[in-house]
Structures are given as structure tokens and as C-alpha cells.
Image (tube, rainbow, N blue to C red; front, side, top):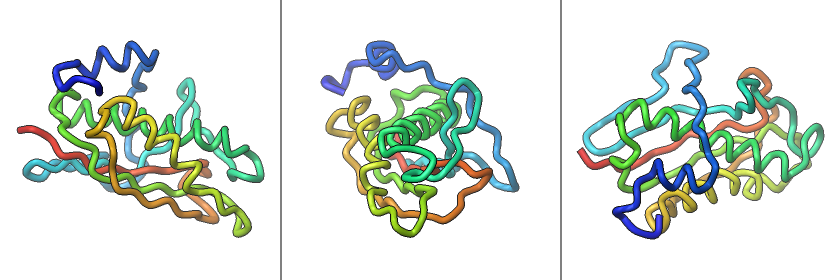
Length: 157
């Protein structure tokens, strides 16, 4: 975000991003937890037009398709954050992203895949979008999703 006063909704509009409807949990957990000034978003999958993107990156999907899936995870994270906070402008900083890439044991570009979500956070929050991160490969993810990402944000109460 170039100026702290610029509204997140305006930035989303400029980037032609329409946040999806937040996905419901697939098991017994909350999609987010607020604790003091930290917002924890549970792992989110990539949805395009309401359909989960599945498959193994490097086998069924290219790195670029994996990056897009990671970006879509980032959009779902923001959709959950909007429900949690009521207003995305309450987010002060993206603290951390944790990324899992569904891939085989020969795939080594997990960091490049999760870059799709990282760039989204930086595009939206500017300097406050820079975050710590992990990117790991997994031989399987829930529902066969291609990528799963969780997040931690600092919020203004």
C-alpha cells in the first residue's frame, strides 16, 4: 500500500480483485482466531469460480499455475480476515505466511509457488505486506488441493 491512508478495498479494486466467499472449515477448527492484536488464519485452499484447484504442482500443474493457486489462497486468506476484522483496514501488517505445495519428492520450487501469495500481500499492504514465510512440499494435501496457505496478521484493535 503506497499510502497508509489508502483503503484496502480501493487497492483491491485497482488490482481487479474480488474476494471470494470465505470457505467453510472441512473439519473441527475455526477458520480464524483473534488473540489480542494478532489474527491467525487457518490454512486456506485455492478456489477459482467456486471450484477447488487440485493436483500436484510440477506434475498436473505448472509452476505458474501453482503461483496462481497460491495467489488464490491469499485472496481466500483476505476473505477470512475481512470476516474476522469486519474491515481489512484494521490489518496493520502481514506477519507470516506458511505455505504447503502438493508435489512429488523431486519438485524443489516450493518457494517460487508460494511467491504468488507473498506478492499479493506486498501488492496490497506495501511495506507492511513483507512477511516471514515458509514454503514446503507435501505429498498430499486435504481434498487434493494444489496449495494450502495459512497466515498471521497484526491488527489494530
